[in-house]
Image (cartoon, rainbow, N blue to C red):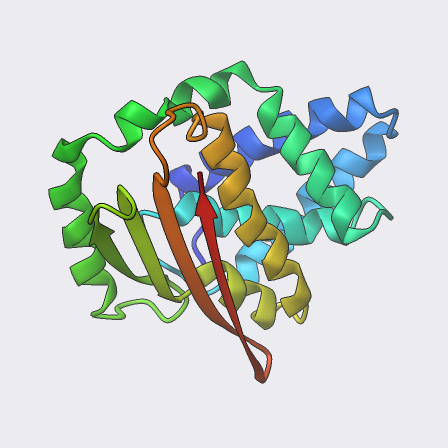
Length: 207
């Protein structure tokens, strides 16, 4: 894929928060450099997804793959490093906003348009999603039929890492305080993806 300005900016943010977390954990500086070099190779091989609304998730996957090839730690430990780096970032909290801004009804038309466009499958590795408006059981639903992070992990020969990117969705939900409104189910995510030759269905709810 093309290393566009957007790709570079997203990478720079993830790399800055992970570098800070690596430093807190006592890793040598060379580890961060190794991650950067490996990430560049992955991006060069990755299939383009255009101006996808989930470009940041695609780069999150490419960065996480690079971490797993560079730190010498397990996938779970690398997930924790990435997670803790994001959670420690004041800028990331500000950008993410809170549950009220996320569930703003004014955002629904854009989400529905994104869902419609995703089914055109203009880019092989992009997500395909149905947006489910609130129905009394939940306030907002996502039904993912195809996952760009899963596809990238499969392309890179490490499909098992995709599950950690899926888990990050719920870390981000916690960061937006989706558990703070004592009014039941807020977000429904149903994620079905093909990992290698096996299907995986992951349905979770944030309360």
